[in-house]
Length: 142
Image 1 (cartoon, rainbow, N blue to C red):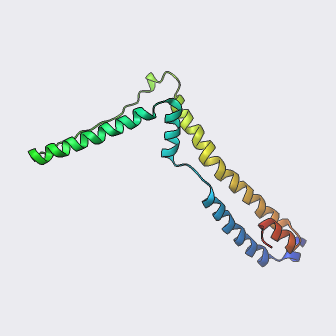
Image 2: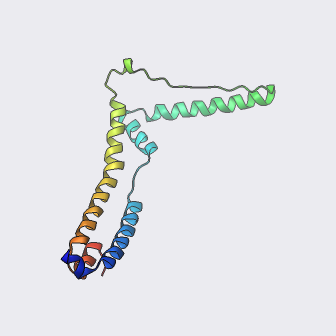
Image 3: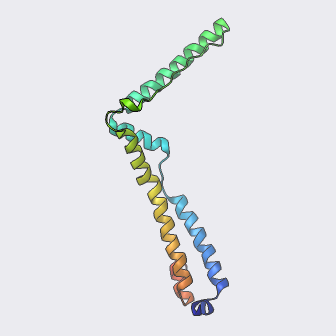
């Protein structure tokens, strides 16, 4: 408790607010890929990116054709394309799904967790330091 008397609780709390703002800035500056970007990376890795793009093109083309048919006929025709997944036919143990999960952990969760740990350590150090100079060094201000 002697440390708090030297530095002052109010001053530590003010420095914590500065530290929180810095954490938000650094979090915003992190380049974290979206789920769609991770899926694209895994598609490339597994060699199915062109197949997925082709399916998307075919669905769009089918929608355009149906729209033209509906204009002429006045019917409300639509096409539905679905993708089913059978766990019993999963021969390779879900390698695709596992890779998506690995990349999600590696590229999305880990950087955020590391940043949170880093700033939590700084918060703890801030409460333990004895002088204003030490506190400013921890927060990174002059």
